[in-house]
Amino acid sequence: MFAVVTPDTIHLPPGAVVRLPGSWQDYQALNKQLGDRSSPRIKYRDGEILLMAPLPEHGRKVSVIADVVKVLLDHLGREYEAFTPITMEMPQKSGIEPDYCFYIENWQAIAGKNRINWGIDPSPDLVVEIDITSYTDVNDYLPYRVPEVWLFRKNQLVIYRLQGDGYTVESSSRYFPNIDVSEVVTECLKIAYDRNTSAAIRELRRKLASES
Image (cartoon, rainbow, N blue to C red; front, side, top):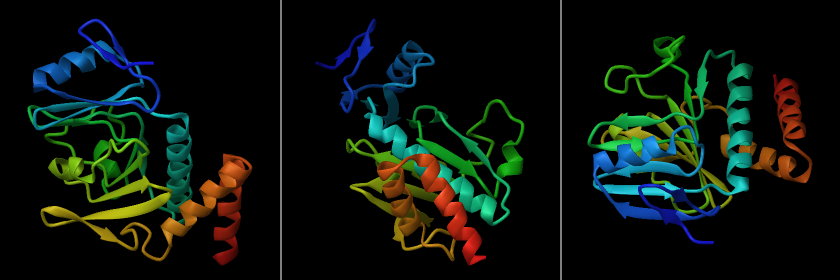
């Protein structure tokens, strides 16, 4: 099955990634054409448009990791807001759709809002991305100054933290400094695949409670 991208039709087989030269106006036109469709995903950066049709495992992994974040935040008694799907845009510069994003320190700034103005409102505190098809680049989040990005690639969670004008790889999360989130994510994904997601989350809650 072939990828088809025309003014009338956009179709990508699962796992396909298409890179096209294009302007911001081209990106907006494709976005309008896609409407409320969740696939393919689309992003814009510096004269290039990228489209990606996620594989089924993509959605499963991001769901598990997002659930892990929620459980950890609840365990610490932290307030938060979470969004998926969401489109982050800076006209003429960038357009991107993170797999999942969390407002933790800035949750009050966007609480109750139906739309987020990226030129005024703060960016998410934490973005979660699953990269199975080499579609994701952590530097796509630099224009938005996202403080922390979790990128799950090749069965490993990598934590990127914003330092000055770039991202550095860190061994711990600024939001969970005393928790080995890479190990937690790996364990939960294993249980989710061996059994199911609910079993993974129940086991995580049990483990956190026993360590309290």
